Structures are given as C-alpha cells and as structure tokens.
Length: 85
Image (tube, rainbow, N blue to C red; front, side, top):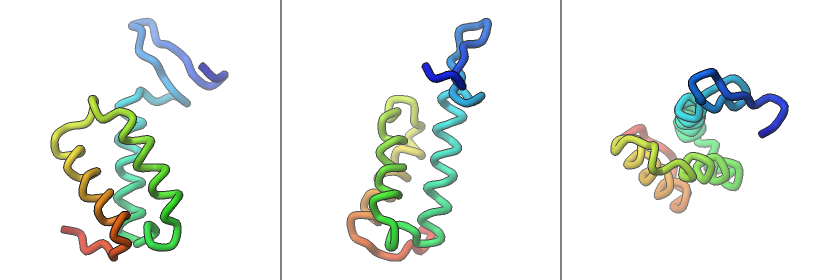
C-alpha cells in the first residue's frame, strides 16, 4: 500500500480515497471520454494502458462494462473513430 492508501474499519481498501469499484468506474468514465474524443487514435498507448488497468479487474466488471471494454479494445486495435454505438 502507498501512503495514500488506507483500510476502513470494515476492511474496505481505499486507494487515494476511493474503493476499487469506484476507481474502476472512474477509469471506465475516462475511457469513454477518450473514445468519444478519439484520443485512442492519437494516444493509442495511453488509452491501451488505461484499458489494461480496467481489465485487471475483469472479475469485478458487470457484463455490460465487460462488453464495453471488449468493444473499446476492437476500436483501439482498428484505429477507427468512435461513433458512440
């Protein structure tokens, strides 16, 4: 754990003040923003790194979020502009 990490009384790990599910959701929101703005075309490695961080917690993702990540990977791999579908 880093200095900014802590554990609550109920044993929940907080990373920079966020639970792991909160952190995953934050990263999913950032990923969506990157795709909408087509950042994945100009900064492919950075967006791929973000997606990899989300994928580390695949077991915690909903089926919908997992499908979104799969679609995001296809968009990144293909280098195509995001159309929102």
